[in-house]
Length: 162
Image 1: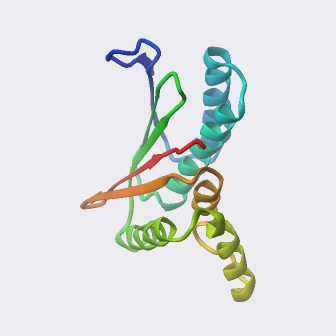
Image 2: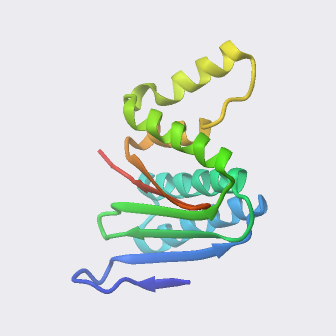
């Protein structure tokens, strides 16, 4: 569902989707968001960055999802300031991994987030969790927040454009 957000600025928009945790939804949602932003706000780097961030967050939620749908909400204004929220159910071990990863990413400098993850993966010679989240952090400089209620996980990301 795409709706106009009530408020003082008529260009504020909310996009809300409920998705089954399927990998094919990642590319479809990214394409939808990017085309929507390009048509309504013009093709630019902010549109691309928002679409990239959305796809990485949905991919992350699918990876750690336990069961049930994923709720995705994108709120942005005419200046393209964006807040992305993803909600899904997750198992306790995955919640703890996510909590640890978000805590780490919010502490490190934006410039080192992704490089540190790659170096860590190279040293361990294995795939490392959180590469997508680290890419988001390095590319946009925003901050993650995490709220957990039982098995319900809500990840919120505020994009910061310089």
